[in-house]
Length: 222
Ligand code: AMP
Image (tube, rainbow, N blue to C red; front, side, top):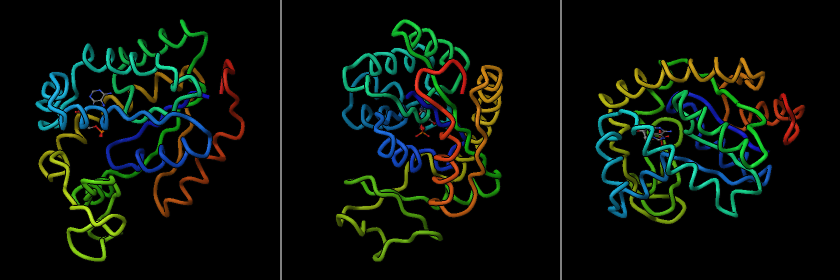
C-alpha cells in the first residue's frame, strides 16, 4: 500500500504517519526529517535545504524530487510507503505518479488531516522535541516532567528553528495554497479522504484507520 498524509504544518502528520506506518507495515518517509538529517550531517544537500527551511519556504522541486525518488527506489521501500510531507507541489505529485507508474504501482489513498489554523498556530509554537530520540512535547498539552529534558531518554529538548512564531506564520501562509491544490489534485483522482484532525490523537488514528478500511493496495481508485 502506498499512502500520502496531507495537512498543514502541525496537523499531526508526523505523529500519525509513524503510527500508521507501523500498523500497516509501511516505510515512513518524511522529507522534512530527511532534510534535517542532511543538514545535521552538513552534506551539500542539507546545507542547501537549510537556507529554505529557516525561511519557512519550500526547498526547490529539483532538489526535493531527486532526493525522494532515489529513496523510493531502494529495496526497503518496496514494502509500501507512508509519505509524510511529500508531495508539496503539483510537479512533485506528478513526478511521484510517474515514478510509481514505472514501478507498476500507484498511490492508493491520500489522507488529508484538517485542523483550524488558530489551533495549528498554538500547537506549533509550543512544540519541543528531543535532540536524541525525537520524542515530541508541548508546553500546554504534553509538557515534559522536567523542563527541557526528555522523559524517555533524558536528552535535551530543543525547539525547531522553523517552529518560532514568525516562521510558523510564514510556513502556514506558504503551505495553505499548495495543500489546497494537492487536495484538489488527488480529489480528481478519487483518492482523497478528509479526516478531522482535532481532538485526542488516538481518536484521529481511529478515523484514519477507518478511512483506510475500504482501500486496497494497487487498486485503481480508493
Ligand atoms: P516538515 O518537517 O515536513 O514540516 O518540513 C520542514 C521543512 O522542510 C519545510 O518547511 C520545507 O522547507 C522543507 N520540506 C520538507 N518537505 C518538502 C517538500 N516536499 N518540498 C519542499 N520542501 C520541503
